Length: 89
Image (cartoon, rainbow, N blue to C red; front, side):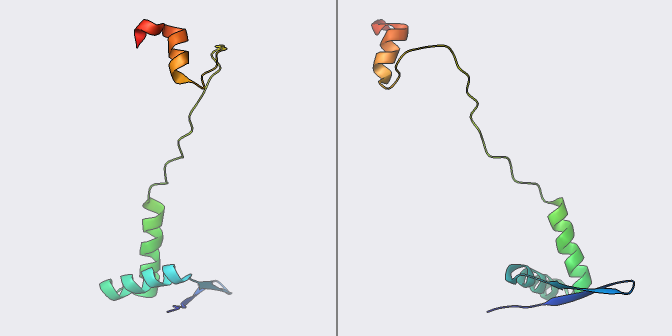
């Protein structure tokens, strides 16, 4: 079901039409039906919620540094033997 809702905003002599995406229009319609708010109040409430929401955390990026070690670490067991000795196992 497609929900289309247009909001006409008047600023002085200028009129702007705001067209909501389906998910936003559904959220607006749901808030209005649950709370009995008018369109303007519901839009302001949803905008405020968006402004107060925390930004998603930045993706984790592993930081690496060159250690100057020049050994082949494709075989972990051999690398451990080389670095720590066979007795370290």
